[in-house]
Image (tube, rainbow, N blue to C red; front, top):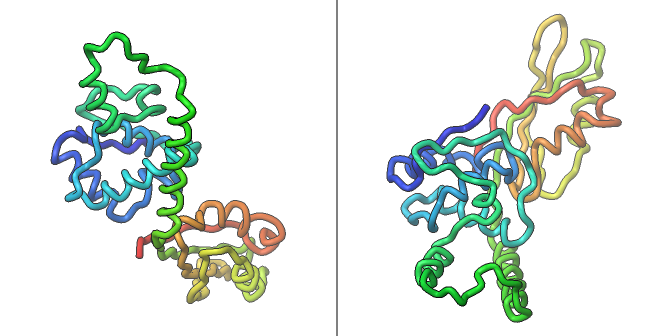
Length: 232
């Protein structure tokens, strides 16, 4: 289902986006996607610092674009009350610096804006990317608290072994917490368990799809559902 936002050049549109990002790291899902690029491209300049959550998100997406790019598809985003966003705009989102440079050079027909980068320009870009990457590593990553429902195949599943299997999953930035068994009917119980993750190191979707519901854990685990996901 597509997420809709209003004109991001208006205070009302920015406030709506800021409220939306209060409890989220990305526009959709648990990793950067093309939805983030769509919204990012709707900005003609860096958002005002008063929109704290928007500024945090904008800085993070800008850093990702400079260092590694974004591949995930997302669920679709609509920006209402603004000009249509083209594929070209998403591929090369505007910035305040490039917009100002373009205004200054409107009358200079001899400038090749699409010329090949010089060796000096390439070196400068690499140095900027290295600086951003180094500063990102120094910055403390955010954390999230997650409540997970782990469901067995049937009432004959050994729930003690199921919990042991869950807790045996070890990943950098993953910390298992308290748990309890909750009856769901017909003699079947589910395991409800808390976990804390470092956002930049652990994707809950990946944890579920590639670890908890994959071999050999799928001998006990039929499915997993995210009950709650909160930023710490």
